[in-house]
Length: 565
Ligand code: TEU
Ligand code: CA
Image (cartoon, rainbow, N blue to C red; front, side):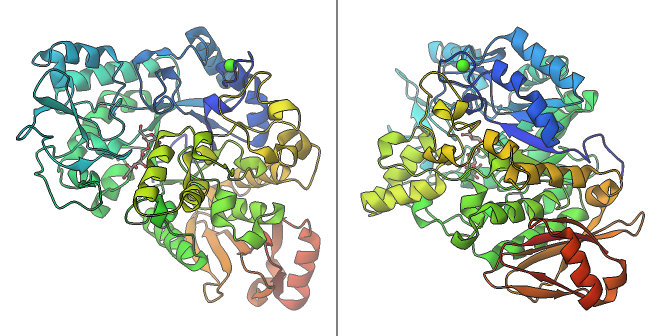
């Protein structure tokens, strides 16, 4: 395997709007990010992914870009952005931006020009299509609800939007569009970016000619993903994109890919694949219901372990996954993956351990490192997210009560991760002196950075130790390139695996007890040669003694350990 500069890195996602506000307007900003670079450095972060900071009307929180070449005023200036890159560089850190090019905002100059002249050059930057019998060309549902086709005012045409109607899809079949995108990507890379996280990229290739089909919901529409699944030949587009941009700069790219064809994995992230890596969403997909959040499923430990292991085994023969527990679209990991009895500091450390030491690039989402949780809201008006508002309605339409629909939002809402970061127990958790754009999770008095920085046994302190262990030059080779092999699969509640270096033969075992009762794990054969590298109950010495004397390691509920065999 060709070694790449990003293989042994640890990444962190910042949701700028909710990270840190320094001018009191209630919105996080670039100044706030710059001021926390040392905090991130100390945590052990190398790569920082910023959710979109481009100019935007914020219909979908910046994933609707109206000018790819400017920074949203809300976040700051281009000078501040350049300063951020320079300051990151000083600390050996990389800034990765979000690349949102499946669609732009309806306020983008291109779309405005297209509306002004629906038969002109710019209409071809998008998908403009004649309706059928005075109706939309077909009946596919956009991800945020409603038909993917929206009327172009004053014409018999419709334009396509896979997401909100304010996010018209760009026509990647048009070479001029592709060139505009490549120029823009190169322009940002020339500033010294480390690379990009690439948004919703599977959607750039679609079969817009799919005829109307059997509806799968009371809205008379059918899942829009069908158009993506029916399309062939995305590889050509992705290769050209890579060749024209990323490759020239040795940039790091992490793609957000759903609904990829299984047999295309190697082309996507194999050596010389389209991308450096892509997120492993296999655990998250377990919770998908057939119709919406109202029929989503809770995580069942054994199923989760199974897909996690299957995914690790499959990926190690191909490339590197980017491993996440949460992001700005997902509920908080501690609330989703931990059973009630494990939703405590020990449980959060255990979850961190089993995730961060997997094979792949770990991505930590802001607040995960202190164990932030989902946030309960009493009324739908307290939510901001466009998708949450849609899914609430979908739940009501399916016959759920108001209470049930709110519970779906509590469990699934994208706003769970978008509440402001908890820096301290001061006003607004130290996030802002003004009125935060979205209300905080009230538990900031208990869960916050300042308190955890003071405490050796906090979740934050543990994350630091865990990341330092992964990056320790002694074990780095094993944690980065080592193979993955499941362990103790016969136990119902144990999540355990070995990382084994082909190069040095070193074997490191990660063990965790997600169950409620203690389990004694057999280490008889290795008992004379074990070293306990990390434990979440501060008993490395005790654990080592038990292994040496009895050839066993007893893990209580929520206990985890990392052992060099
Ligand atoms: O998310 C893409 C997205 O919404 C997917 O979960 C989608 O449902 C999937 O492709 C279905 O198969 C990204 C961003 O992360 C999100 O915040 C944006 O709202 C969205 O794109 C639109 O830009
Ligand atoms: Ca601000």
